[in-house]
Image 1 (tube, rainbow, N blue to C red):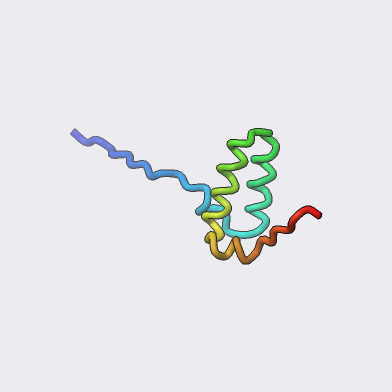
Image 2: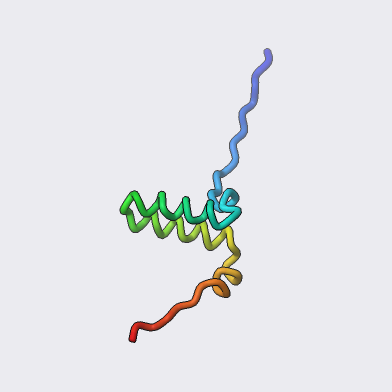
Length: 65
């Protein structure tokens, strides 16, 4: 008896976030859902895709006032 075996691997969105356009599209799609938890997950995926230390160098935080 011949049985086909199906294997699955865990989906990781960060793997597909390879350039600025993909990242922007991904974040825009997440923002359209108006779900803070989903946006937090999307930001985590972006951070993972960019490497956290690179992200820290790229982003500047400014205080208000």
